[in-house]
Length: 285
Image 1 (cartoon, rainbow, N blue to C red):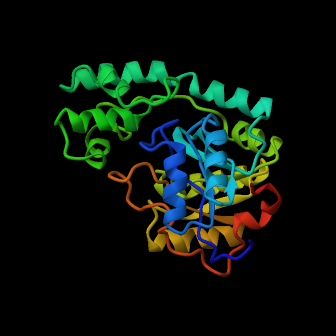
Image 2 (cartoon, rainbow, N blue to C red):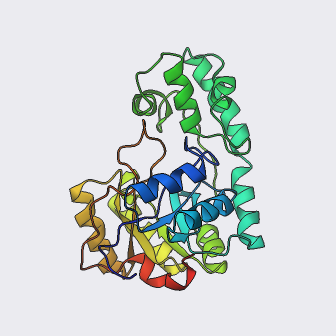
């Protein structure tokens, strides 16, 4: 399964983090949409992987374990995806738990800031959308703010309230880049920089991110993803070649009503790139 044209979707979220579908429903949707290799990558969490694996087996859908770890890098939150790791590895699970631990405190701070901006009761409102009490995120707040009528959709919520510099945004110190990559590789997986086109990094900061990531043992970058456009596809394909990284592909699907692109509906990887799954054939379930 080393063909770049494989319909792999290696980035999506379930109710175990900030998606709206159960892992079993995601497996069914992936299969129905023609996905040939699937990974569930919940934020800072591995708790849905056993369910996802069982559902993928029922669908005869090749599956890779996954997670998406929040990292603080030069004052910016960056996400590192792990693929094909041992999801029972104690060091990885401890690291994910530590990363999740600050989310509730941050959520209360976000609620306080949103109240100052005229949106009361946001913490309680967001909790109605939370599937995992340990993992409340900005997406849950966004769903409440839409429900309460302050914005027409979740994208508008992020633009107005929850992006860096907006009234409801609260900074948080996540894992270090070296820690996240180390947890993933220590558990036998491959670390991948998620949707690099989304980060507000200068050219020098982005070069530093890729350089440090590679030096710590990172091996891949998400080239084709839901938040990238054609210019990003070209740019990060070039980065693959420059930094000698493998390429990943994933929709970042969260919800049928919120996501920009559905599971399995991405453009193909450029044929000149080495796909990440070529390193993970022995880890496919």
